[in-house]
Amino acid sequence: MDATRQAAAVNAIEASVGGASLTRDPAMLAPFRSGRNLPIAIVAPAGEEELSRILAAARSAGAALQPASRAAPGRDAAARDKIIILDLSRMNKILEVNEELAYCLVEPGVTFQQLSEHISERGLRLGIDCPGDPDESVADAFIQRRAGYTPYADHYLMQCGLEVMLADGRSVRTGMGAMPKSTCWQLFKFGYGPWVDGLFTQSDLGIVTKVGLWLMPSPPAAKPFAVTVPGEDDLAALFDVLGPLKTNMVVPNGVAVANALHEAALAGKTRRDFAGSGPMKASEIGKAGASLGLGYWTLYGSLYGLPENVSIAWSMISDAFSSISGARILSGTDFANRGLWDWRAGMMSGSVGAPPGRVPAWAGGSSMRVSPVSPVDGADVLRLYELSRDAAGRHGFDLLTETNAIWRSAQHLQHICWNGSSEGNGKVRTCAQEIIEAQASAGFGQTHVEASLAGAARASYESGATAQLHARVKRALDPANLFVSA
Image (cartoon, rainbow, N blue to C red; front, side):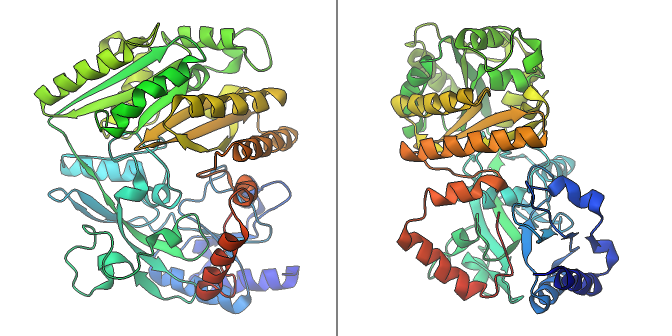
């Protein structure tokens, strides 16, 4: 689209909703730059009526929209040039929270913090599974298939019922919501016929305008715990012990396993707090863990249920993890860093809050993430970590990593941190792309990535048949390519 048509498209959208809902201020757009790419405007509808008008104006003008549940620099940086970011953050109504049946229905702009405050104000005995950022959209955690820390950590599984606006402006309710006067929209996922909710995750096929999510009833008892081990290679032993405990649901939560650098960053420390320069050696990483009273790796889990059942399960997990040489099993009173423990324990109990520090601050405030998935298996997890660590080290970066074990798979969140400079951005992107390629060659695929890495992640998956299927669905639902993804 040439500059004249771009301006006309933005003018048409602005005319449809008014200037208060749209900005083309260069200062507001600059933080969303991705390489040489820059959006031409950000439009933020206040509700479905405005959203419908925006889609109609964009269709008529031939514009392209990149939806974002909550547009924020670093979270939804524009990876496509000359697009209009469709920011859904003003669509932020909590439509229903049902304590008896433990579910909520929210618009896409609702954050975990907002939902938590709403539940607290009403005194409801419900917990929320937050993937880590209180300001993240509840809907986006489902759309991006993010993982959290409670037994409800699998947001894709816990989602129940969507409302979606298609490119032609039609609103569609999925599952039981397709039936007029349905009593079970947020209770039974599938309805009758094909189940289509997954089409609208990590896709450019429509706009999610409402999402239902199951919430965790507050349990009679809960016991958060940590297991910390001293050696880099002990990662394999941790997962070999954890695997059967997860498969048999002895430890039902989204179990996090983080390296010492990740926990040091969460505790508010930075690379400058430790001696030397460049990627830290294993011995130095061990010392970073020791500064927090931890080892090289720390696992965080929690037990839930009746007090007597929790006590029995605690004996089981204590015996299991004690089989690892040098392992220490910790609970609240013997965890040295209280701020870090309080956050970790709170997240596993269904609370929402910010950790004492931020991972990107480790090396200057910016980070690029890759997110491969592996089996909950010691050899596989260690192999994935080592190839990722080595690739990061070759480019001069530390690897800060946390893994969430859910059901039978482990979702890894690997950070490469830098100071945010444009020169550093290029180096980090090259490093991340190399890591993605190395992981794919070893059989580890991405679950979600930064916007600028989406092409590399997509290329590792799309065989001819898969790409053709996606293209056929796209032509059917959005033939004019109104929506673009990262």
